[in-house]
Image 1 (cartoon, rainbow, N blue to C red):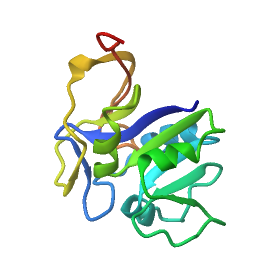
Image 2 (cartoon, rainbow, N blue to C red):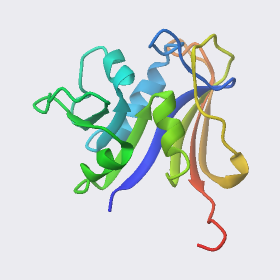
Image 3 (tube, rainbow, N blue to C red):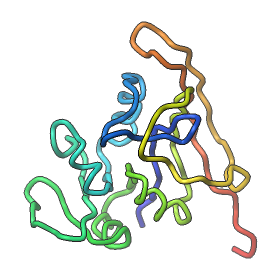
Length: 168
């Protein structure tokens, strides 16, 4: 069975997007995202897919959630639900939910791991990461980074694992 995780860059005010783009440019986060997701499956909503500048992400199995499949299976896979998307990944060891907001909201109750890049600052946005209770998660790794010549915002790479549910 595939391990399913969320990966997201999230501002201090939970902003994740504006006008179908990231509200910041943070090359270190893009590199981190690529390192974690390359060779694995990525699941995203249609708007997130449409925001990718060069189409499907290379060296990853791309699955786009859509209510109206168009049959573009030569470039990426389509699914009508997260459950169907995960089933398309039965031979993958790792599946990353990469957005957007409604896809995160649908999957946050079921994933056991989240890779969050906290972008330190409050950004104007029209799309936000769903609120979640940090007490339900263990922070298992953390890397703090200050601004530098290429990254205009300080940021923190955090990995969270869900605490054991009572009665599990």
